Length: 512
Ligand code: NG6
Ligand code: CA
Image (tube, rainbow, N blue to C red; front, side):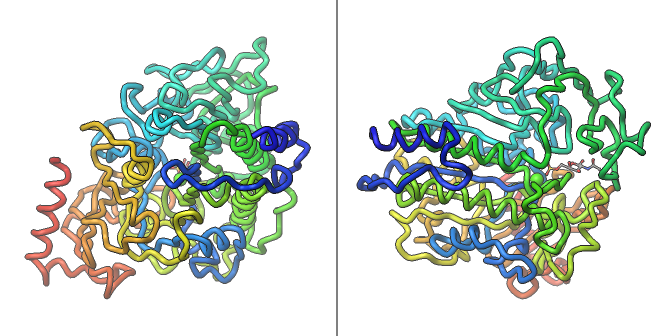
């Protein structure tokens, strides 16, 4: 223990640099019921973005290594095709479409998870874990009526089970562009208070709309409000100058915080929930990654993301705890190429296919909207690395982890989450009974076996800004994902029985 402490002190004081926590430590016998758990959400990463999923134009060696040492899922789904609902679903075990106010949250949204809800972090906390949230949050902070960023922000993640937080309140394209650490804006000078608004301009800082000449990254859609670090954002802010983040350094900052959290968890097992800002827009790589992928900044921040994962892996190795750490890496929703800035992402693709073979993308009910990379490594329990082809949903992470920890869940807790720990660790290769997908407009689809049914919807066929096919259509759609994984042929009219069966199943899930 003392030795561990020494290693961690050196990391906390920054002596260990950005690679590991120090010398390898002797490993204790693994306790399969109480592994450390790391859950990392990347942002808008596609199933075609990683070399372990077949990408050839980019190489992601660290994530590939994680996959090669664990279970790599090919049929795993985020609950939703955008960030806030997916994160809500994972952390509460409740489908976001059951709840109002779970759509893409503005940067001054109240905390949208009720403090009385038992979250996944609560379960870990109850099990005696040290729990931490680091990086992108996007589930709101503070009370109904909006967040006041100038005092102690409550409720925060510490009100729903996390001991420690160091978070980006919303997304990197939304104000305020500051980190919140344990309820307070990090580095805030109280004589320069922060004001944030999502309906009108506040203060006198330039905006993209009024001062386009001051902008170093031009918007392609929206993103026309307050300019921070030369980048016009969504929403207006003023104040808090000393607390503003540097976009180039976000990956370094949150990676260091995550490592410190891991290193400081010496007396108990830990649960780290981490959200990377990569690869969401604005895609601003650190200079050491800029230009390195040959695919423009979208590719560069994939390299940066891979570096982050490597840093976390190295930290576990240097502490000698990799073996009994259950490490989950995934994405909150599918990929998008131009999501609002003129960053040349499309022009620089160079044959790279973020969506893989799949139709749609972020926002969509088609497969590329929610079928995401999903990797689980836990060497102590997964001796045989493998591919997992069974249907799996992030909604089941909650109950599956609780099952591993032997933490019984009271009735009503994580109501939509099924305990599938054996599937999570690749030992059970069967499909989930069904998987529900959700698009930007809350239209739902259900997959069972090889069949996928999309409920009819009068919502727009295309997402307004990105022109992504949303999967909304007035008539029911049915695809055979085994024969037609790219969802080219709607076979609903040829299979009325199947349509009826799946529509009935979806109705049953909705009503349950
Ligand atoms: C959209 C933004 C997009 C992104 C998304 C949320 C515009 C035109 N588009 O409204 O840039 O911020 O919201 O992404 O403003 S998510 O991954 O966090 O859900
Ligand atoms: Ca996202």
